[in-house]
Length: 279
Length: 296
Image 1 (cartoon, one colour):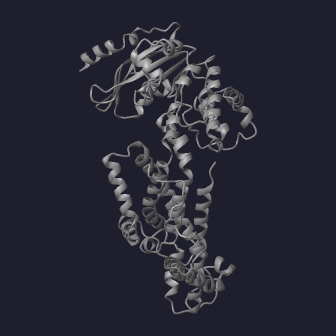
Image 2: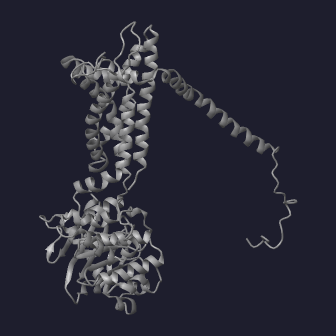
Image 3: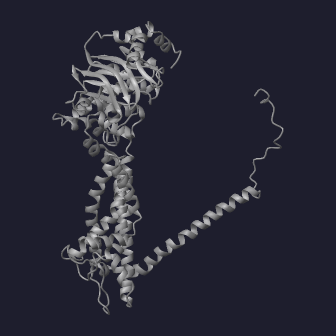
């Protein structure tokens, strides 16, 4: 089926393969096929992540955007039935190379999850966690403060750093998780629907934060919210679901500058999606 | 749908009354059933409270400094106490804890995290569940066969027998509380670049710690009150223990021995020892509760 599927993918989305980033691609992600057991979850998706920009992944439920994101730092390795064909290159190095340690990959490519997930320890210890993990020799206290400031949380928590991270509100917890992720100064930050559990005010704060973060980090953002993509993403990748093979297989339909994807989509499917005809 | 008229009041309901009608049949039934549950609850707690009241009145009368510090009296002797039995019980429970907690924790890590669905894990879990309902005297017989025949009666043998009893409780409680650690937390740890060992050591164990300690404390409390496994392992002694490899006194065996003696003094001491044993178990239970509540 691979030959026909590939031919179909080419026919459906000529742009998908055609997009090449203007700047440097920090991660070059070429997923031919991603399987969970026998289930083909994602196929034919070439998603370069550009340095210093926010790359947004949009698409309907089950289109594999989270799968693609989680394959970038090998979080999918935790699912025993996961396997894939293709390659993910980070600064030219094969992330799935035989000699590569996934633990090290994740220290360079940090992650913020859909549900805020602070550890059951103090706010300070949450942020210092990664630093201690990496046996950071410098001034931990200073780095913790800086990370919290960058995550726009410092003012709210500076007097209660010893309180549990779980005592914070949902929006504060998510910003704490962002502070925890950036304290170790990762190169790339993967964000998997970071605002889906947050209220509009907290969402706004986190979005503001993302715009500030891209000054220092490269960000890949999965979002279910198209307005969020237009507000923060520089580049947008639109994924669709193909049900022609029996299962629900996600694939990249179109990728390009956010403005182009939303104002001048080249694919009919993209046009329908961004105009709200289906979701 | 359209024939429902919301503009006029339904005719079926007569004059609206919100007054309570206590002698209506369903009100009476409800009251009766509530009263029944109250009655049964009180009936059920009568034996529990009688035991405690008896312990406090009978045992409390004899509970003094001498009872807590002196050695057991011989036949017609007056006075005396059971200090050696308190020491023996505490030492043997400590030995049992030192043996069962590390083994139990490691086993629980395997069951909860490393390979929860393997045949080995399934078998181990099944055996542990079966052993929680294990007749405690068999732990004594087992230890007798393995240790006592070769090395004689000793505090170590008693501790091992208690450890055999504690192990399933510790394993199952620790496994349960490690499983309760939300997956999003372990995901976060992996996402930070933790190895599997670091995820377990830095996130799963600390997060599950209150539950683990509660399980350990309950197992300790249970072991402290056991007498059957000590019968053929630690035996008894009328003196303070001088080393771990000699027959050792314990509260539960002292109660068993003294309560069947024809002397009032010994019977009174058995009551006092029972009260002390219950207090020890109570302290462990309270500790378990306190530790279980304290979250960061």
